Amino acid sequence: MAFIAAGNILLEYVIGGAAVARSWTSYFATLLNHQPNDFRIVAHSFSPNYRYLDPIAIVVLAIICVMAVMSTKGSSRFNYIASIFHIAVIIFIIIGGLIKADTKNYSDFAPFGVRGIFQASAVLFFAYVGFDAVSTMAEETKNPGRDIPIGLVGSMVITTLAYCLLAVTLCLMQPYTEIDKDAPFSVAFEAVGWGWAKYIVAAGALKGMTTVLLVSAVGQARYLTHIARTHMLPPWLAIVNEKTGTPVNATVVMLAATAVFAFFSSLDILSNLLSISTLFIFMLVAIGLLVRRYYVSGVTTTANRIKFIVFLALILGSSIATSLYWAISANGWIGYTVTGPMWLLSTIGLWLFVPQAREPKLWGVPLVPWLPSLSIAINIFLLGSIDRASFERFGLWTLIILVYYFLFGLHASYDTAKEASSAKQMKNVEEGP
Image (cartoon, rainbow, N blue to C red; front, side, top):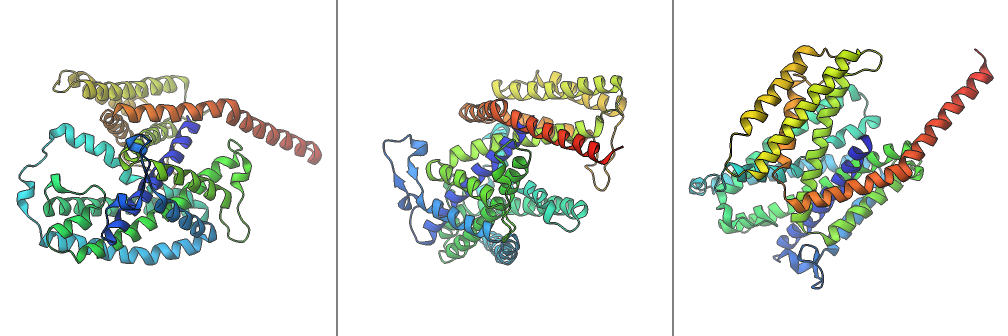
């Protein structure tokens, strides 16, 4: 399960970086008064979703790779300075956009109904990729027990608020049917008569996406480094350069994979695949939190362990059933009267009848088991809104990492553990009792 989670986190970063790199090309084209595909190579013999080849995305990722391997401190300084400019552009977009707002654009509110809202929410989840990158910087943080939770929660709150304000502003500037999917804000300002503003917006977007790519490069390389330290991936990926203090090999490999996806794949393919991977990871994290709080080997009794497994299985089962019913039933509601109470009673049972075996030392998620149980239900529910093709691609990737795990990763990790155990025994023999 851990290796599946790790593999999908890596996929999440690769796909996310590829999507941002292709968006970078779109805003760059807008800045130069061109259409995005003017800067892409059209391969007519390829499938429509993989036909528009993006060389600019490759160049951008190559520059990001150089910056990421040079210095962590240098990357942090660049992000700090660039973020000030980015915040100024966001404030300009919100204020300028609201000045040109037309409330009539909201007259046809939620045109696709509740189902459309949830389908959009499922795809929207790729906007939340990257917050977990903060946790990968624990080794380079002075007080990680305090600073990592503040960084995670603080950045998520601020970014979510900014995202919602920007979305509201965009829909007030233009009818939803006229919003450009490649460079929405630049085109929106041009549509309302502020053609000069599109250059400020495009420049700010380019800066913002450059920062996102750089942070992603730093985070994903450290994920790969941690996995390689267990020997479940080639150990040379864990090598840290003595001069720069950065994992050069891991950075180059991850950005090379990102470049391949960015060169071929359209934004629609990337966003759907990224969202399904992100939702799956978030669901696993919530399950992992419950396991960590309620089960400790040698502390949790057999009876409590059985009760925990039963309640957790019921929470998962009811969540999956709700998602499936949502996917296959357009207007039905009877199924929810069964699956909803089943989830609620399972969570209540876990809360009342299974004692927590571990308390957080410094900072912990509040309202356990309610928050993680609700997270499991919501993430699985949103998975039911994603198209079949994305599930097939996701299943193929999961199959690939499982085959690798059972043929290579499992044996490498076992050998590493065995060598460590042998070394410890040898040390005890040499030092005596």
